[in-house]
Image 1 (cartoon, helix red, strand yellow):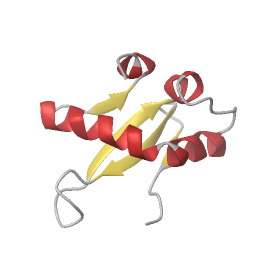
Image 2: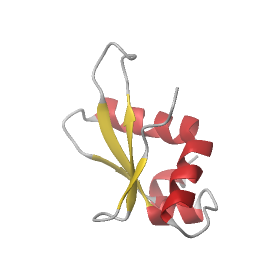
Image 3: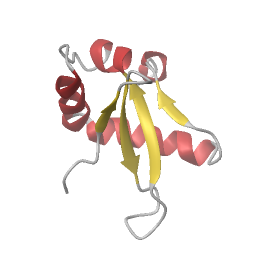
Length: 87
């Protein structure tokens, strides 16, 4: 499947979709900030490089975003570097 990820300049993050209950269920929008992509996933500078870093690491990023969604379905999901320290 093609990634739906895009760089979101106002928040300095990559925005992406997760489907916690499969593709027939809800589509949840989440974000991972630029700092996390640089420090945790060694993303180079540039908007497209950040989107590519997300795509290359989507399995682990999506898994954490899904966990956050399940913990509190009403909270916005924005992953930061500190969210990955315990992995």
